[in-house]
Length: 211
Image (cartoon, rainbow, N blue to C red; front, side, top):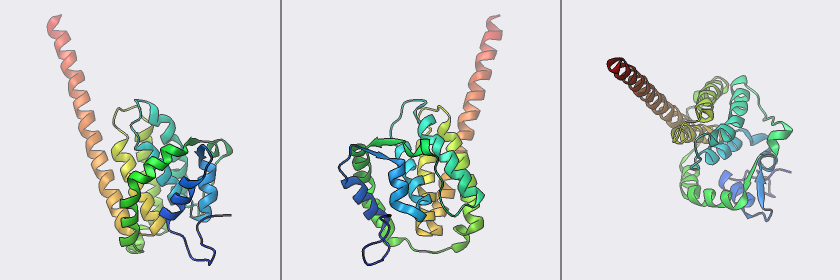
């Protein structure tokens, strides 16, 4: 039984479902519990769940594990699946519920504000073709998350968070913010690559001068 509807049949806000999941007494929150809670609406919430996890200050290589499930989710979204399929092994991925509570408390105020101001709009950005493009963008961002880059998780995770909110709320404005943040991520990666190449070339030149 999903938590996305109240007893009267009205849709429950995403933030309210997070409150219910946070209030449960078991020690850990697993992905399968999140998927079960949101049911047919699980695509956006589960992606948002992993975006929150990837915002944590992981050591280099930590997001290789936390970003990997997003690769599967992004592929499904790009493929055009209507409902989320998660393999059994992925359902067991979990975090401490207290960690989840801290994360939700940190983001609850902006999330509730977002829910208050967001509404279905710019439908072409969240329709079938739009969601396919979102899936491809999230696939790229997830691949960046998987790379062991120190501090490289922040911008891609924020972009995936915007895309997730856009999918959940059918809000094209959130999707536009996701595309803007993706552009920032691409620019940062390009500059980082240029610096690495320049540093490598400088090292080669220094060695040649020594020889």
